[in-house]
Image (cartoon, rainbow, N blue to C red; front, side, top):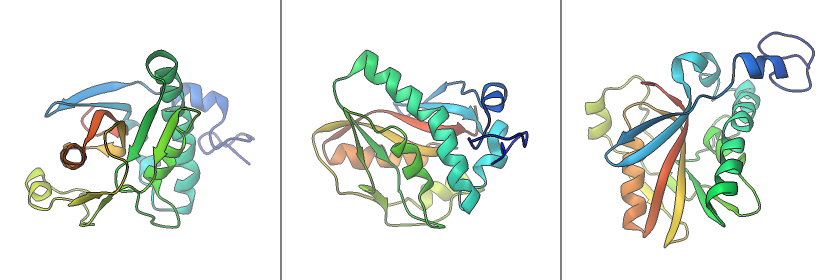
Amino acid sequence: MRCLSCHRLSWLTFCASCQEKLLKPTITKRTINGLDVYSFFRYQHIEDLLLTKHTAQGFNIYKALAQLSFKPFIENFMKNNRDKIYVLGVDENVKSSYSHVALLTHAMRGKNVKILHAKLMANNSVKYAGKSLQFRLENPREFHYSGVKNIEVILVDDIITTGTTLNEAKEILEKNGVEVLFALTLADVKG
């Protein structure tokens, strides 16, 4: 196998050198309507990688990005903060034989980290890519939550643009007795 970036021989999707030089996460924070959203990359820096999310190659790319960002984050978080935490992906719909959001949440699994796969699903599958804030507000996702109640969760999505999806998800979760501690995204469009 070859590194996807430099094409040197590598057992990994991205060799150690490219991971260090090109894909080292830099956490940024945005607060939207009281929800703290932490992102690992700026969208512009990994846009070509993110656009592979509905392709076969995207499976390996998202899995590698999750291992470089979400996995170390949760390990550090658990070491310093918690005995147990729940992780919940936003709309883990399967497209092209996998869910890119599920890959992100799956990388966070651990001894005291409970992943709630496919428990927060959208009833409206409208595409938001390239759409205005007004369009997003007029076409809500209409989330349905079917998971455990009276818990604290970390909310996970792949990209934050306007924050409308994460805020709608947070509102539905709060109505179901779930406290969202904060959200994690792979990339921030505005960051």
